[in-house]
Image (tube, rainbow, N blue to C red):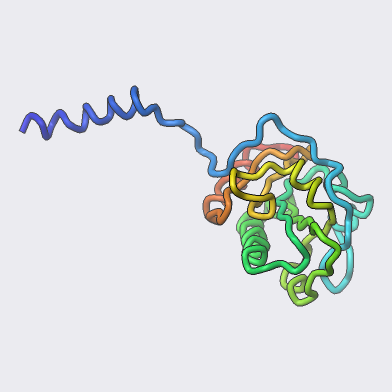
Length: 191
């Protein structure tokens, strides 16, 4: 009986003093130090029947820096956009929509890393998505990936000042991404 009562106390001491929980609350991996990626990408165009509007029109100057003042959810990959790519585009669209009235503070950017042309049917599903181009070498240099992964496996967060600040893991959980984004929007007065 004494063992039943003492075991939880011993387990908690062991966990706290030996294992030492990290105490982090974010799901995505924070990128330290922050990286200025404002020059990353050149504008290709925007989706939607009316052409470039809103933030996409503002991006006409080119590069991530042209979206200054907004949080950016960034994905990369070839224009052919395989099933995992389509899933990431869908996830960032849905995560942005869940922010409700705050969604105007968040942009979605797809940086295409080849010379291909994206499927118009795919683009029609993602109205407002900002399209940019960059070469694979630049993306590999500027966007750190997890060991054994490449930049196109991840979703990246860029702060309103143009700094790369977070990377979500490969096959990220959209619900946990949503919580991180909500926390960032709540804590930030910029963007």
